[in-house]
Length: 254
Image 1 (tube, rainbow, N blue to C red):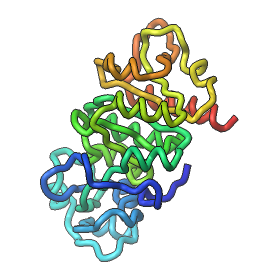
Image 2 (tube, rainbow, N blue to C red):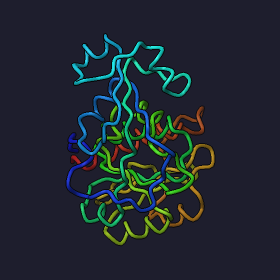
Image 3 (cartoon, rainbow, N blue to C red):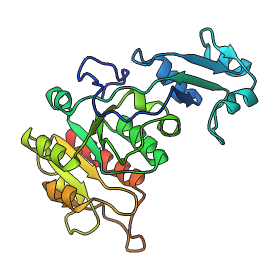
Image 4 (cartoon, rainbow, N blue to C red):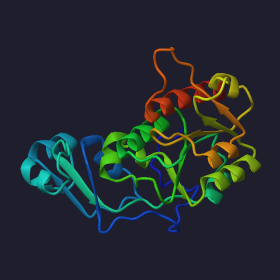
């Protein structure tokens, strides 16, 4: 997977169906801010840093504030490491452009709720060659400051696609030649066996607790599980995503 910022020429981001917040977005933490500053698609509105962070990161023309002043700009409890960037949300790519770009592996998140999980999944996607994540337009958190901090810069490198209907998007991907595999525990098929079919792959993960919705599961070509010890019934969705993405990468590299 390319490590270049997410503004590469294909696919193009479009402004339709993008979840928005009122006003600009704050990103914080060394890795998240460094990655955002390296991404030409990010519009720099305000860069604040402590003297130590500005010197360590070799920042260009930051506004110098003490750490408490930086913290006052951010959500309570934000671990900012002395640096924060005010910017705007990146525009999601369209599903049509994503299909045209033909990435080898795509992740789909069905109504994920926790922004920490979202950020962790972006990070795993960047680590294991998953070039895009598809989320629903509603009922999914936007990749804002909390998610970006958890992602450690990966929201700049992995394409985000927002769709109104996840099941319909899976049908489109299946028609384009993708093997669509949903993850759930209620099956005898293990994920490694499901990945034996030729790629490219779409890996579909459900929400925390509730898992895949029935309509989304029905749109998957196969449902597979990650084998676990009998002492554990399930994994956190971000951990399951990391394992699934790693296994898919191994199959793609054969």
